[in-house]
Structures are given as structure tokens and as C-alpha cells.
Image (cartoon, rainbow, N blue to C red; front, side):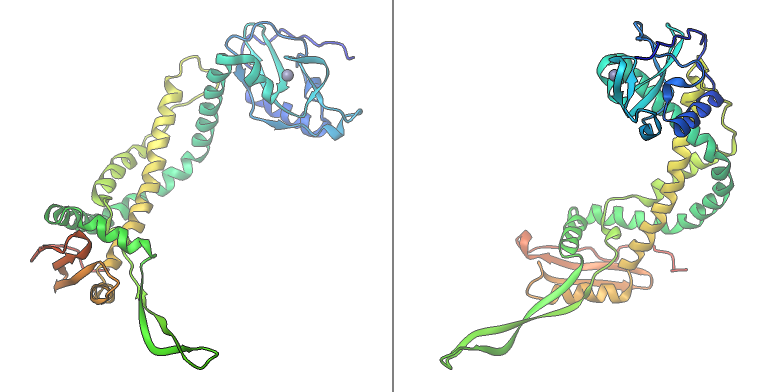
Length: 346
Ligand SMILES: [Zn+2]
């Protein structure tokens, strides 16, 4: 049994340099409990606990006895864990390293609060670390968003007006399209028959013909690309402003929340522009002549749900003139001369 260490000297939580040194000490020795001013006594007051690390894999093979690490919470005098966490107990003014499970098990509600705070702090650190890079790429992202806007607006208008004219048609078409990965196949009678042993004519032989694969399913979903881009652009403007200066020891959580929210919005906006760009690229494939022809080919097949499916082309405008959905009681919906207003592909 080793002698308990007790260093009630931390009036405030230790700084980042201290924690970095602790990590290094653990890596090189396998002894979390022997680092500078780390306590090993069993603490009594866990209120306001602050997690100083995530789960740390202690290299216990480096320890002289190669045994696990004692845990101040549940087992101060005997080997207990090899995955641990660092914590600061403000009322006891100590720092400890305890088993990672024990924190959850012994701290109850205090643990939930501390864990939430720990994750927030980790997120703030990572946001601050990448902010300079984010600020560098944002002007380019804004440029891309602005250049995508006419396409996004055209597709969105087209989707909205088709949805108004033929409610449910887009979703139906999309489900049909995606159900087979867009592959259009036809089972044909080859006119041949299987040979049986007795020489009698056997079953008919069928073959599957591949007609192609439909693309552009994004055109048929309910995503509104222009609305998305406008929202993203609003948040991207915010990236010009520096984030507040933040320290883990800040009592006031205002700055932490500000960084979290702004970081989340700007990073999300960058991702959104990229996703919208991909969406537009896919949606535009729908309007490609080959794709529309394949749709019409599909409409002619016995296996399709349509009695007839054709698109009227007019410059960069198309309109489905007739779609009769066999499954929907051959109800005919007609939308003529609808403005798709898709800008010419660039
Ligand atoms: Zn424990």
C-alpha cells in the first residue's frame, strides 16, 4: 500500500500547460498518480467537479508492478483501472485521476453536468483551433454559393411548381427511381425453351435487358437548395468577425456559448454549401436529354408503373405532359408548359 497523497492547493482549476504535462507524465511513466500535486486520497465532496480530460489509456505495463492504477473514488489502495480520467474537485481543491467508469457511477448528476461541460470545452478548443483556416476559406465558399444561386433558385422554383401541380408525383417518381437504384431493366421472352431430359419442351427462357440507369434523384426530393444557400450565406458573413477570447477558467459561460454557436453555424454553412453544390449537380443530371429519354423508355415498359410518361422540352424548359400512374388507378395528371427556368449548364 502506497501512502496517500493529498495536495489541497488548487484554488482554481489547473491550466492547460499543467494538464499537457500530466498527459506526458502518464505516457512516459504509466503513473497518473505521481504527477505534480496529484492527490490520491478518497475525496468526499464531488460537487462542481470539472473533468480535465477524456478517457486516457494508461500504459500500465510501464508500472513497476505492471498492475492497474488505484482509483481515489472506489479503490484508493489497490489496483483498479487502466482507463482513467483527470478531474478537478473545486471544493476539495484537489486534482485526481480516477477510473473512467467510476466517474459515471459515483458522481451521478454531477457527472452529467461535468461531462456536458467537458464536451463543450473540447468543442470550443477545436473550433478555436480551426477558426483561422475557416476564415481563409469562407470568401471562396461565399463566391461559390453566390455562383450557385441562380441554379439553386431555378431548381427550387421548378420543384415547388411541380409539387403544386402534381402533388405527390415527385415523391412517387423518386421512390420508384430509387427502389432499383435507378436501373431500368426489362425481362424479355427469348423465344427459347429449356431442354428437358426426355426431350420435351421445357419452361420458357427469359432474359433481363439493361436499358440504363436513371440519375438526378435530387431533382425529385423536397430539398430547397436556394433556401439552404441563403441561410448558409447569412451565417458565412459572420465568419469575418473574430471569435471572443476564451479561457477554460472563465466563470461566465457567455463566451463559450457564443463560440459554440457561431462556430457551429459557420462550419455548418460551409458544409451546407458543399452539400447544396452536390445536390444541384445531381438535380441537373435529371434534365439531361439522355436521362429524360430513358425515363420515357421506362414509361413504355410493361414493368413500369406508368401507362405513359413523356416530357415536353422547350429550350431549357421541360414539362411532363402526361403521366398516368397505373398504380394510382391510372389517374392522369397533366402539367403543361411549366417553367423550369434552369439556367444553361455552365
Ligand atoms: Zn473507481
